[in-house]
Image 1 (cartoon, protein in one colour):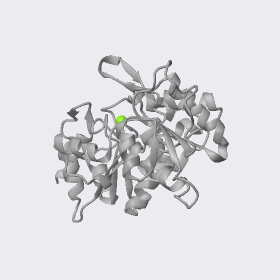
Image 2 (image 1 turned 45 degrees about the horizontal axis):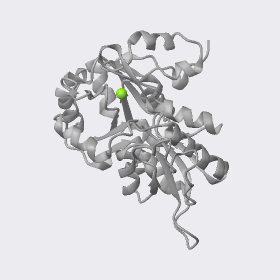
Image 3 (image 1 turned 90 degrees about the vertical axis):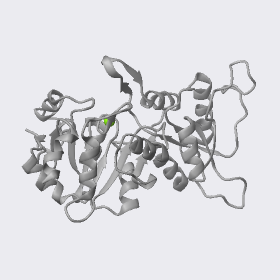
Image 4 (image 1 turned 90 degrees about the horizontal axis):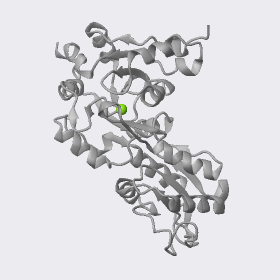
Length: 324
Ligand SMILES: [Mg+2]
């Protein structure tokens, strides 16, 4: 029997008495958003009240942060959604979306503007939010928006290459096309591993919809570029440690006193487990207890690392522990 990581996580139900002791130790609580705080435009019942009480803390306030792989919204858009759905007011700096974190990564990874030539630029497969976060971080970029038609001189297979491009960033892109894929590959081949970075916001390959349907996630687009380029992207979103490092650098939090709350095992829970956080699964999103049971009974260390410390049916289940 393989040893379970970190002394063996058991996915224990977080009953009120246990919740009281777990939460009294926590200085920071990180939340995934969709499937945890809300589903689409509807808040999970009781979630806003639970967050208000959590933030107030016993004696001193706790830090709440929002950590999401969704690259189609800016930090400001998340604070606005939290407000709209009745959650406690949050500052943009409490929100860590994969669009913001990708911009932050590229700002540091790309050579600064020097005396020789223009600042390094990024070819982006992504939407307006990714563009806005790059703009806010001062990273010059091109490529967002609709792709030129196949009969245009700017079609990706033959468009002139911008000499300043030193990275390709792949995020959620409703205008993803063969032409964009061509251009991404041409930049990556021109720069090689050293001269052109390949960065992806996240690997989520499917976004579930109500009623059992789904749409393809950004992971499919990242995979397309990786396949064409024959190399692997650096991923900023969960389960990458990078997104947690962004939080830890911003707020200097102690992983041992931090709880990660999520509805997805291979992103939220895996990231939390890999970063030494206490992990709490909610069943209001994509995961069932049966799936966790399968991992729990497995001898495979990778599968065991998907098991959270605790679970609740909904974060509203924390209310009794917080109300006393
Ligand atoms: Mg989720």
